[in-house]
Image (cartoon, rainbow, N blue to C red; front, side, top):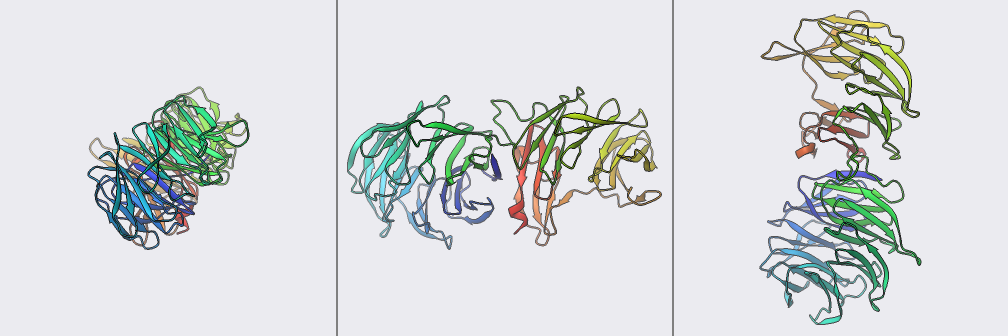
Length: 535
């Protein structure tokens, strides 16, 4: 199961993890530091002038090494965020960096077809190893500071820190050491192999159906190997005599660019879709937010309405294909599909963990048991000229718009709670906030907004006609509906921003911890803001 998703402003190309810290290098020149548990941003490291394509922490977590398309290698002090040293010498973009276990040497590979070894103390390049093509991968053994493997083209070679070639040569596109340094995993594009570093004997081998852009990594305990291909991640258990597939994660919509474990049960992936996803191994395989567009989509038709029940974490997207689908955010269970047979649902609203309201084109409100998929009750709408319908946030009232009239009804007793007459030119219901409702009318040139509070006994009280465009997440944070971003109430600073295709949601619901938004491209995004609200 995907426990959380972090959306970045730029495509992330590389991840590196140490303890509870994640470093992210992206198409932007800055390096982001994230909390590995919450996913919240902890720091930004400016300094490079082009994309950062490779990152690695030192074994003690005090230093971070970065390689950039600006042709430089930098060493950062993790505690202060400052640059300790910058290595100059490459004449082409840098694609890979690694640091030795004793913190004495940095290796860097570049499109200039060289592997360079740098002395960290002096900052000098003491060896330049020429290759036949771009050096895509450099990896020091985590236990042997003299052992280094590089990949140039499809050839992997062993080196010592004196620049001498040692050991055998392998056919591989990528190589990664196991945490104890006794094994390494490599891929040839058609299969992935785990081998003993000394004997070269294969411990496990997996065939890859989709061989494009394969990435591999070990879990911290060395028990699991994760393999990413395009949008999908497969996790293999390599212990015992029968290595086997234990998990498949689907959720990204563009190529996965980096993969790392933050714990034996948590895997983190980054993708060109600008998302960093945190996966929980053993919980559930499919991310309920976004699924692989090449397989079965989460939503098979455009989503017109979406709702979120706070207590149980139930999400209920309603499409235009006559199907309502429900998921549990907490367990990942679902979807349960309610086949309504009508392609004009307008609004859904869960009450508790079971009930969903649906309006059909036949002007009826249907109440479903979402757990059993059974229709419990049908409420007839009083007039046949119904133009729009919404259910109040607490599920107690239903607002009906007709030609020249708006009415509020108690959803359980079916008794009228108030009505307001207005002139023609109805646009529709624009917003609901508890018992308050905003509607829009148009004279053909402009749209006017009118608002009433139906929670006051007697005739509804007229409110300010200003349409609310924010959701209050708590006293300190608000969600701006029109711009899809979170702002700090006091400072006005933007602390979270959705962009591009996620920049404008069709429907948004807030549940006290999760914000659920649906989009025109058949997607539903679930955002966990619990860490942000605690700040």
